[in-house]
Image 1 (cartoon, rainbow, N blue to C red):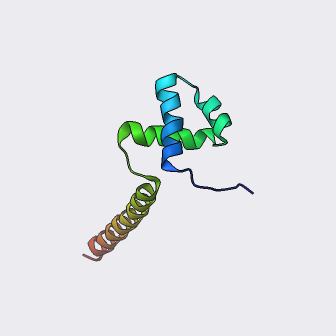
Image 2: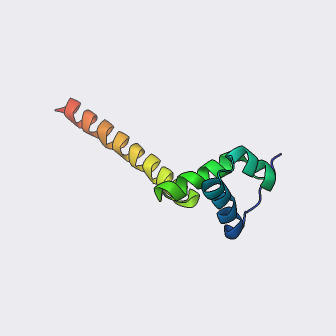
Image 3: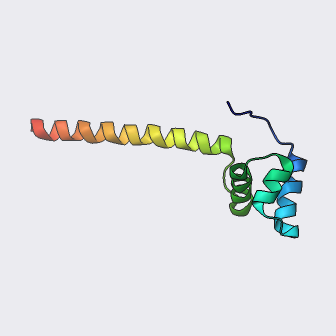
Length: 85
């Protein structure tokens, strides 16, 4: 089972600074700080693009799924109505 823990914002900033400013590889920074490479790549992506946080991403994904379900329902309703006429 994976251990999950939060990284303090100042530690995140330090890790990202080492990568961006000092040229340390993501693999090295991950190993040095005991963080997964995937987490660091996620932080880099968010900081580079100004994109949504993980919480915002999950909310957007949920909303997208709900909207897709609604579009599907409306499409089916329209097809059923058209067949009746």
